[in-house]
Image (cartoon, rainbow over all chains, first blue to last red; front, side, top):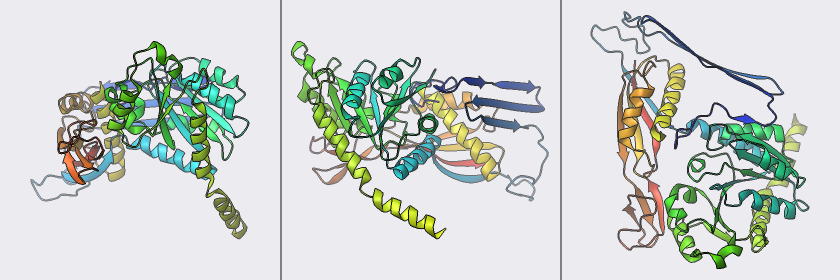
Length: 313
Length: 113
């Protein structure tokens, strides 16, 4: 479920899945016996089943002290207080942390690319892959509602890519990304780019386990987008201002736009680029190289530690 | 729509907690909702009744604890209150603010049987 727009999740699928079943059974038997069943089957190559069964028996109301509170005194309620202290998005965050642990263990730098549709995200990505693939190992997870067109565009550059079609969903979630990573199995110490579904609202709330969110905004959009969609620009560490080659033809105030972005996120770093002419792209590459290097600083240490542990065992 | 799916998230947590902490009826739910979380409490109350129908939280009462938006102003070196993410500092008019509270969306506690 998406907490922002309420879109469904029922039809999400990862490219390599060739069979998928979604079942939803609901039975109601009068008022003294009630069952709710929800069956979910997902078949992929490794054959996985997920079942979720729930039974609610509501009307056996004559227990005096069977409940967890074990209250036996007449008239005393069995009600008790339970501290939960849980984030409503807790489940997604849990999956995201698992992804993050895996990425850190394998030394993978993961970037989550977010933007509205048509900002030139895929063009920026294919150009970056083309220019960087000789110096580092790369992999891509593509999120779209439908079609594998973007993943096909990425694969044409020679970089491994996997498509997630979210179906009714408007964003990628951490569980989908976890499954996609299993299929894609990116190399250790590689850079994994996740191209999120084109949407400036919902992806802001969903942590995928990435190191950084990178927001892409094109100058053909309004310069006030950062304050119109503050959550997204607040969550992002990097703002890429794309299509700057079109600035002479437009009435777009770059300084104003950056000022708006810094209002919602004082620490945001801005790169002005044109993915079609290549202008400014070098700064973006330099940033990727640097964070990638930072990621690897502790690697040799970690590896030798694991080897030592292996020796002891 | 937004609040409807949030309530589904709440119900999911209730169901998990029910099997973990051994209860089968929820009577009251306390949520902490921050001013900056873009959640509409009115819509939340409405959606909660709809979503929890015929579940372990059927006719449970929903209490929303409002958390006001607070931010740290770097220029004034003090805590100030804000209504929106992109508000300026009410004292100095600057935008060097770090949100310190108000973006909560949390299930705080439950009264269960």
